[in-house]
Image 1: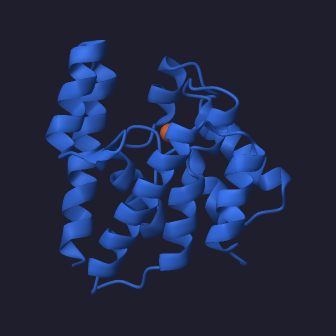
Image 2: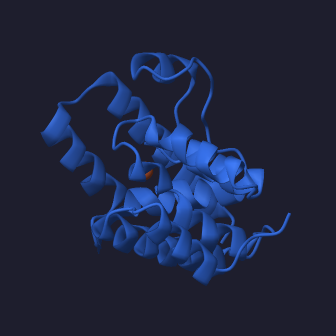
Length: 173
Ligand SMILES: [Fe+2]
């Protein structure tokens, strides 16, 4: 697996015309993800994969802001011959990841899109901690979503999954 460098990733985001605020968000997510990765002592983490995955996780938003942006992002990276590990980070970063039932609910092909590797989990978690350009707790992040979309079963389930994910990552520190 050859992970491209930061300049390549930032240039790619410009090339696909990802809007500026989302590029800023992506830089913040990448920084947060690297911060989490640097605190992990009990597992081996590919920090470069985490950093570049953080930068590219929302690349699908150059096409749509709907849930499909995760899959489209994965497709953009695969089509450009980038490592599947980066594509997987795009595909699994939405909410706390989506299982088959969640995917069906939001109109995606019925499949699990759950973060599995430590790098996938770190980027998913870092993304939940970054709303726009400031850091929030998982509680605050979901409260904002509850206010906007209501306390839906999808969001409640997702919050539970993210809380578990955060516990799991903290155990590795
Ligand atoms: Fe996203």
